[in-house]
Amino acid sequence: MIVVCLDLEGVLVPEIWVEVARRTGIEALTRTTRDEPDYDKLMRYRLEILAREKLRLADIEAVIADMGPLPGAAEFLGDLREQHQVVILSDTFYAFARPLMRQLGWPTLFCHRLEIDAGGFVANYRLRMPDQKRSAVEALRGLEFSIVAAGDSYNDTSMLAAADAGIFYRPPASIAAQFPQFRVTQNYAELAAAIAEAAARLPA
Image (cartoon, rainbow, N blue to C red; front, side):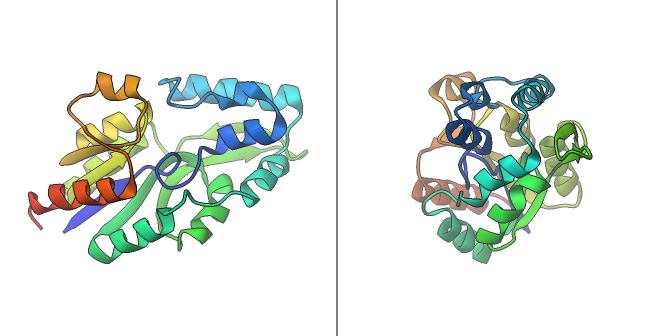
């Protein structure tokens, strides 16, 4: 059995923090894992900004409520799920992702959790586990699944490397250049073809 593991933001939905930055005018929140490979450093930076700007979870949820999947994402995911088991591996948070998962037909999602204080502010975050994308892929391979993985950023590269086949989806050129071993795709048709080609080479 082949399992396809996909990143969420940048692959199926827009970057949530970038959209929050756009809606609030807080330019500093545009920084993502495409810019900062150290996830803990990035999240500490984000939490400091949220505290300084007095943004509550409800403010972020209001932005997410107006978001939707990337154009064509729901159709791509629906077609993919007819062919393979699919697991979404993301460094977002369940509180952020739930409205978007509804629009994608409730695929399986592994991500992290936020700690919210009594005032509704984001006080901290809790990783499900360190490097959870890679660990999830390794665990699935340990269960005798063959894995094809796709992502777009630094925090996806260990997942791609752990999979039987790793594919980039619309990565920044600078990241693609650092990891030339991963095939680069630029649209859902290319990604679907790359997944199908990789799956055909793997034991079912």
